[in-house]
Amino acid sequence: MCLFSKKEIRFTSINFIKVFWCKIVMKELKELTKVELKNLDKIFYPKINVTKGQVVEYYIKMAPKMLPLIADRPLVLTRYPDGVDKEKVSFFEKNAPEGTPPWVKTKTIYSETTKRDINYVICNDLDTLIWLANLAAIEIHMPFSKVNTLDKPDFLFFDIDPEPPATLSDASDVALLLKDKLCALELTPFIKTSGKKGLHVVIPIVPEHTFEKTRAFVHKIGIELAKESDMVVSEFKDTKKPGKVFADYLQNSPLRTMVVPYSLRSTPGATVSTALEWAEVKKGINPSDFTIFNVVKRKSNPWKNIFEKRCKLEV
Image (cartoon, rainbow, N blue to C red):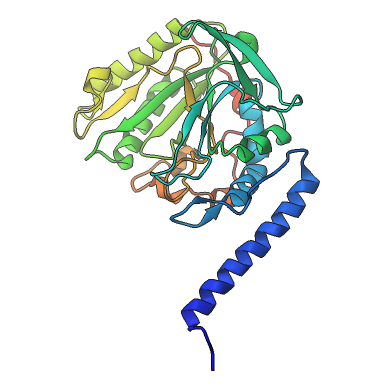
């Protein structure tokens, strides 16, 4: 007589496979990196049963696309030591944590807001990216300038943020309108999903202007979009108006950040902030289309040559 039902046997088999897989991953990763990996079998995304080991593996696979984009930028982390469950603790971290290995590169930057030095992590290599994943830094955020030119941004940033009942499809329409306007100014825009409800449009620029000037430029474009489309709002006071899409310019400030392209997000389905081809920006696009499971399978790298497309901004 069988002591277990088919359902119980299947559940036990799945768990056994997961444990076995985690042991294999642990062995391979230890051979790959100097990082002391821990608790790879801990569940980080309970709804879809994704483990810490799978998160580390994801970031290893995405490193070739991520590292060129984040190199020499002071990073801000959102850490989820016990996963993304709403009941679990998470925290925002700028300062390199206690126990940071000596081989992790950092940059000390004085904060006018807090009146103290902050030691930001700089991630220029695979080991550091693995170390961040091992810290449970599920979300990684980057500023719009590099450490050697902190006060001179090399990106313009538009956060296209729909307020329900407006959808990502509405944000896509606004993004395409924005693309046409930017191209008419001989600027080269790139786009990605935020990984949540909106879209991010960035333009690589020669770092020669202050944030004050670039923020004013982005705001001006948003004002023009709002005049052309009743759906668009360009002022912060209007951001929560139902059915509107906010062309947000406010992040264009020193050490303000956007989520890194290909960073995971703290959503139940492990969505990813994903670099897109403009041809993909169409009606029906959905953040849930881009997850830890399928983004690694994408062959294209739409932001591969982004720094070769730097524009000289006329302000």
